[in-house]
Image (cartoon, rainbow, N blue to C red; front, top):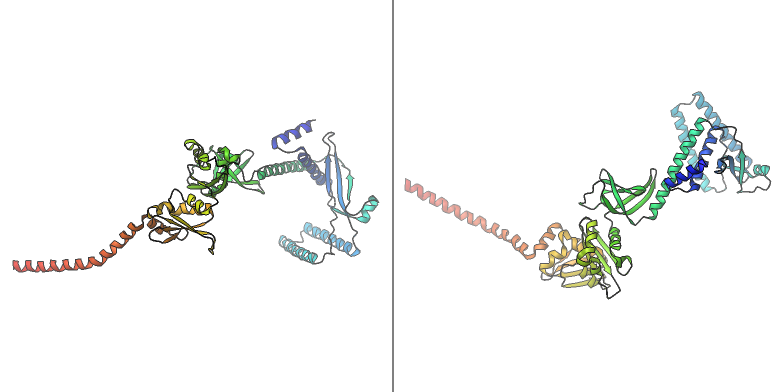
Length: 463
């Protein structure tokens, strides 16, 4: 009863099943038996009865085909070589360097042998620890056949010693940790691609470590919102990006910059999206700066943009606050590419949109805008047109209405973006100094001549 209560307590604390704890106990008892009483050729398994507290030890072997005389001879030769090597090592006849060289040679021979085995399927191996020949299995029981498992019960000569008990303890601790890690890994692997609330635990360099219920997650710098200042104890919503199993346990990579977190926050805050009445078609995001999100509904009586914004912006403000003040543009999706591109470039006013679906580089569109709307259309550092291009999946080129010059957001430099914002005024300012540079030397030359003549007249008068 005491063992039962301990097992139940472990299961409750670690979130493990009773079967996994029993399997751990069996592994520990098998390790302890092998430590005190086992032989190298035995494949030991233990069975612990939780009701009686009794343990049975078995040697399990799989029945395989009989070996040929040549194979038996090769196995015996290998056994003798190993025994001789052990005796030499014990006597100190082989140095550490020689032993290392011999091991490397054996490793190379083993690799060569494996390559030969791959080429020749008839060659097979025999492991006396886990396998037994058919002829030997029939001596135990005549009904045995190939692929059967021979289960031979072994006698426990006496009580386990201190070293065996210590081995069992270490096995139990290790196995329970592995089982707990696997449970946590499976739990969060199923949650991969969802959002959860975590609490900032500590900072590891530029990484932020968060407590997320039964585990800890890593928020790397590239997945953080630019400009966001987190403090220990802050509770934030994070997106579970990648869950992997490492030697130290489950490794959970979190994100605050992933576009999917915006979708899920909208689903949490806006009932029409969570119910499926309004659908999110696409999201284009530059974390910490601006996000464009395209929404659509088939219900003519519902305004998808207004529903997402809410009364006096109450709904959208909650999402903006969660994303550290990031600006969010809600765009109405349309199957009509021209209308969709026009909506995506808002708040800029568009004069015309021409589609070029036969473009070699993919779908592209030429957008014509008035001169006074050029800077607004492009946005700061080209952000507006860049996000619109990602949102619509069209390559957008901006064209001035009067000059007819096409400007691709991808091709523009930072200087061109600044010049585009000032249009013709910038050109006039740039041209003016050129004219002055041409005229200035002539004016300076005349002034110098007049000054020299006046100086000569003054000197003559004084004389």
